[in-house]
Image (tube, rainbow, N blue to C red; front, side, top):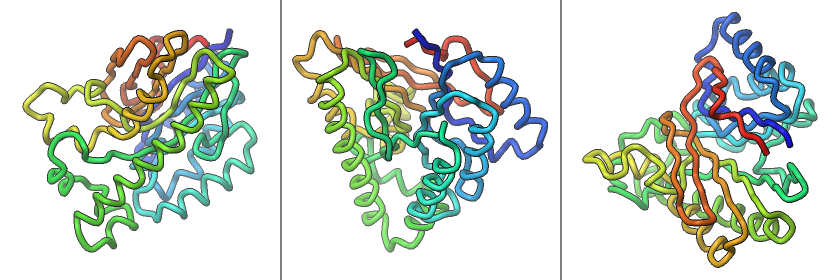
Length: 267
């Protein structure tokens, strides 16, 4: 069995003081983990390549990661992807899950993942006009209307559902348990806004509903299999049992890279 440290929303671009980044490096080393899971918002667009390189240098085990919305700030989406692919070529322990096929963590345990995006299919999508992403991600800034942006976000969510659906089907053929790394929680119940007066405002921005539906479809009838989704984005920890075979865990934000024992996974 191996131990994997799990961090999300570490926002390393905020940790601009050298000693704060060094503190994160020390936390990684002290965690004593065999591997590291990152579920997005590692940094921001201008710094994503250098911050991933920093992590790769200071954590010697494999680093499995997806990106979050903040990782695209100030950039075009594809230019960020180009930087991520370049840093992964330079550091063999970096594994961007969108480009990575099924990973066997153990003989019967697999890992898959991709970013996804919020799709505005829960709550009131009109509230998405208040999100910063529409202004600070260059691709969205240049779109002419909110309708065009929402259509683009839903297309990204649909694409993530296709990627995960296909990989999950294949992974379940040879593994009993499959972990999924993604940024946006796929179920409203996995957010603290669900069931509150704020739900209509936050759920469109906080959930990738399409991905959750696809995962449930694939897992239906597979009573002897398990799917565990690890997500971030909301900054608040949450754990929800979606069905007998599907579970979702959302990590607390970790500014300055605090590693908490409850979010170290034994696989």
